[in-house]
Length: 77
Image: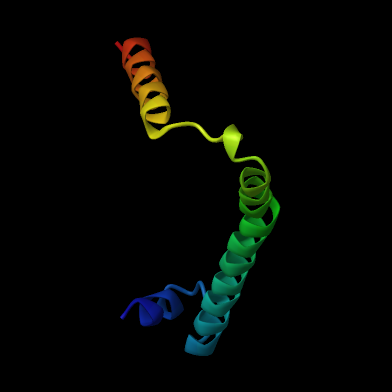
């Protein structure tokens, strides 16, 4: 079991330390996602709701993605 391997390696003193570390990591990840949603996603959503004319068509977005992809392929040749 992975937890037992971590304890056996000496990285952690006990199974409970591994579990605590895992729970801390999950809490940090959840906090980071929440921060991203609050600070980056919500403002963009609000701006789009306030002014839908800011939106771009899917065709335009995918055209830009294709162009960027083609440019990156050229750079790596």
